[in-house]
Length: 298
Image 1 (tube, rainbow, N blue to C red):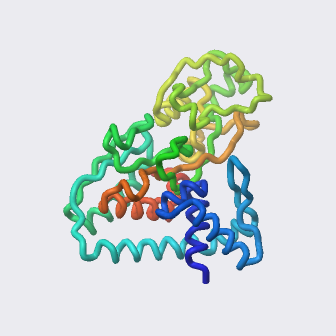
Image 2: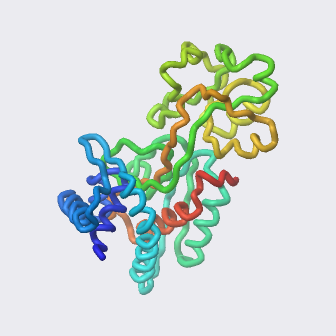
């Protein structure tokens, strides 16, 4: 089996590019490209579609990733246990997470790590602002939407869908077509995540003036439940309100209901401490297993 080729392939898929995968693996970009090409030649199929701007999985690539990703995660975990068995990790790990990130999933992941490493402490800061790893002294971050910085590794750990929601009472009173006075939005600092990426052909959003602006999905959700208007939110955060009948997903949607990525972001491994590397591996593997964006637990 071509272990190095599969490792390189999974890293490219998880990190989103050959350059990011090279930083993750600590090898030149040309090495990653050569390993993936050799794997494709050995399998006799094309796994990735490449262009100058992006990569995409072929059907065969989807199947191969599904087959090997969990095995590689197991190998990584075993490797990490071997590396840290004779090493007493200690010190502080600083983690940045989005507001409204599921508390239960994160608490479970941190608790398990602290059980294995009693001399480590973890500081968690909830913010939707983009953090500077050097200036703000963070070791890693969880972010919705792939970061634009080329200096960091971005490992995709889950997906979530954005959609428009309103209360049944508001829909009955105002109708979906009237957004002028009741549209809800998020601040401009979210622009890089395309949270308000409405369909260009839908003129109902044109000139909409938000009356409530917040950087908390939880607050926007509660305002929508109270009949204050239409909120664009992650669908998994609204599952309980949908089940309770307090929110309705607008159909047809007021925006493209596209899948957004949830990423674990950190500096290249050469710039990380041993404790941060171990925690990044543990946290990424744990969140992938739990598919955090699909659970919606708090």
